[in-house]
Image (cartoon, rainbow over all chains, first blue to last red):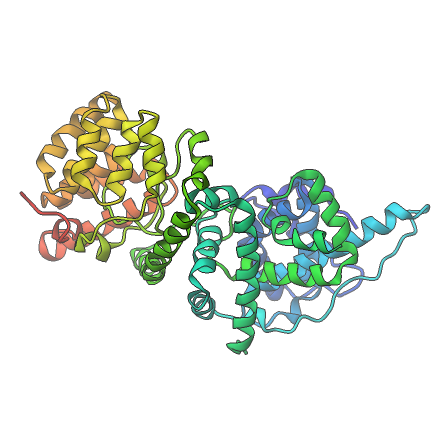
Length: 201
Length: 287
């Protein structure tokens, strides 16, 4: 499951042989043909930093994050044909990252309870994601953000675009950090609803 | 269970402590609701502007820089309104809400997503890169809603440089100058005095001050950037473009991209009509 040796290469930007170049054909699926593979590598390279940054947040440490991204890219490669060209590649990859992470959490929990961790096999959590997220455009997202109520929008913008922490936003707006958290959560739920209603695809 | 579900967003935003985050990972293994909401969260993150923690990509062409600037302007009007709303909330919460500010060494003073001052300020709490909002700057409609509590805290602490920077951001250039006059002679203060002179259209005075400062501190980032602006304002497109190249060479995220884009625009403009956009801009009155 782990390819930790190759995972080291993931963090070196512009490294000549990133890990996903040396992914073995895979035991579950035939390797894609060269052209498709090249396209996939380009995509993986373009979103590697974003995946890794988010994976660090999910796992809490860089080395687990690298493993998780490696796992994500392997899964993505196996399911490359499920990506619809022209849709949002980063969203597609993030969706796979999500599945890989949830599986990891489940496996860990089961392992913690189990006596024989070696033989542990957990059903892979790979639900078919409806394509709605990957086909939402930047314009649709900004329209949805613009439709948020003022108090939600400003917090969301400060967080998503300016990359401010809860504390920094709290200081800037003079509200408690907890309030920042709850507003962000509500802003995101509203956005999801707005995007669903707005009928992205 | 329910209390754990509430920390989903804090977890996904990297805001939980290590132990709490660990507990939440366990929770995620069994809570289908949280798993689904995390998915939505990640989709928004993926669709959103840039990814936090990832290195900023470079602006590859002037066109792209323009597109980005326009995109920035689009959200600006939205933000101007919301800042006012946020301000109202702040006021209703009263002064104790600004407590944390007092504990920070340099509170960030910027509020808006774009900057209304074309010049760069050297005060550390006022130099985060934000695209320049041409419309807002040239209308002279005033700056951003810098929290008064922040200014008060700076004043109380005797940080006149900070007060000056905050006043400048909020559009009160004259009072900003008065503050900076009393803020001593540190390099950053001198840079900001020159920046204000430039912002008020006294390009020649600014240029002289910046040259003097750069002699002292040759690669002072804000001084290099503002010197290029001053040259552009004086109509010296070629020197201005070169000066922007020097500023861009420092490789600061955001600022370097803008400097590069401005250098390119100046070169294109000087070929076409002998003056670059910096020189032609309404914000800069050529003395």
